[in-house]
Image (tube, rainbow, N blue to C red):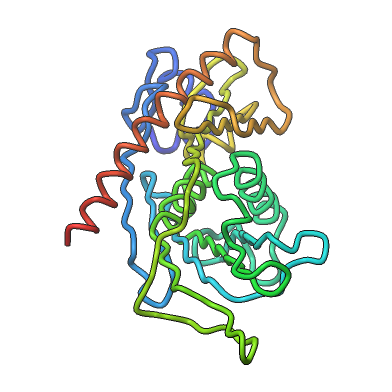
Length: 276
């Protein structure tokens, strides 16, 4: 009976829970799903991480390659993110070129990298005007269940912190790159952004970490990205219900506290990997 009611009147079904300050999955309005992080699971990548937010699962693999620097930025490298939403993760996606949602997610990740200044592109330069690193950051959604952006940002940061790059020198005699695989060093990560997403339901209730179903019922969406200093890196609000300054500040405050939770979890995971 309840399943049938949920199918016919999904919003009314949710209202009964929201009025009690909870959700059908048992979470409170400001409660996240269980978050799990695994790093270094792709041995063929230079850095990798798998992140799960409830059922939403994203894996990030980073491949470092040589490239010629741009003429107008001879001392800078490149970071190229790409989000892939395949039919494997949800029936809503189709084979072929990246759809609009994948393109929006890829641009969002690029904006987070740029706005947070998590990596100085100058640190990717090997030889000014001659050689630089390009980091290809491929994010693949394995199971789509809402809140894709939070999972992607978390997977990206975890994978970047897992990257180990070999020592590279340019031979004075041949002008070719000499790679020393026996000497590797981690990337210099200056900032560690964390994304926190919200959904506005029934123009009234604000919930964090929305599921796919909650996103489909939402009258507004909001994503806030903060760094470890509590500074805003990016705010994304693609239309929908407006938020008062007070409610927006509440969301930002929750994002700051969420950053501490994710940061503590990620530090713990990376520490356990180092001690293995």
